Image 1: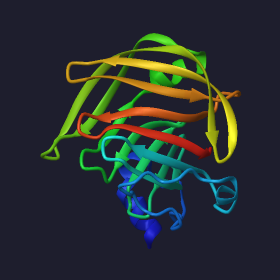
Image 2 (image 1 turned 135 degrees about the vertical axis):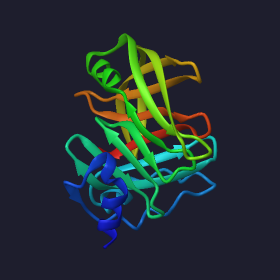
Image 3 (image 1 turned 90 degrees about the horizontal axis):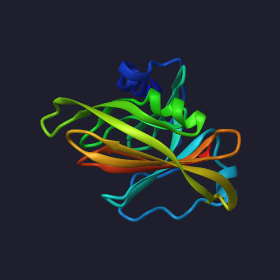
Length: 206
């Protein structure tokens, strides 16, 4: 039944090609950041796993994979907060006060694979305070910003950092992406909207 509820809640965006139970060990979003996960803790948890931090509120949680539909992956927390990722990048949220209903970031994802790009267009559909959908377009430049080493579950991960600077009528923002050798996205800081601010997403187990 729980999987069916998740499926119905997310079907407009992701469908339900494959659904499984959200992992109940993570705990919900908390006012204090979660401590870093250890290698032993990660080994005890099954399946793909992400950590999400919201700097504006200080909330953080670990989310397990709940559903996949083609290239989309839906991650759910025990309190039913959801993120939808494509190629590791954020394309939607569910359960936030001001949800990102959908982000068309295809040009950004293509540029990430090639190491950068300019005049990239992305379109966001977000909810305002009255639950009305607002469509916003942004023009972005994605540039390499050096290398960085991440500490994930006690392991050091070498990455290439790319910075995406975006400008639009309603807001300007800067997204950041940490790409491991082989092209796997291991961490990103991405704009959700003016009220929510940024979501910091760490791929504990891609």
